[in-house]
Image 1 (cartoon, rainbow, N blue to C red):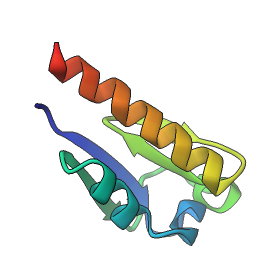
Image 2 (tube, rainbow, N blue to C red):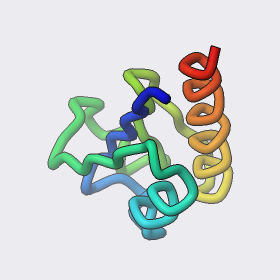
Image 3 (spheres, one colour):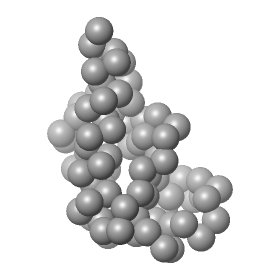
Image 4 (cartoon, rainbow, N blue to C red):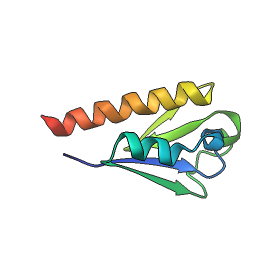
Length: 82
C-alpha cells in the first residue's frame, strides 16, 4: 500500500473542521501535514482547500471539499493497489 499526503494551510477554511483527525481515522495510510503557508496566496481565505499528493483540491464549502479530498485519496490509493 502506498502513502498519500494531504497538505493543509493553517489559515485554510478547511480548518473549520478537524480535518486531520477525520482523514487519518478514515484512511490510516494517509498523512495530514499542516503548514503555515502552501504558497497559494489568498486562496486559504477564499475557499476551503488542500493538496493531495501534489494536486490542489478546493470547493465552495468545507463539506464539499472534504468529500473531494476523500475521493482524491481513494483514487491515489487505487494507484498503489494495482
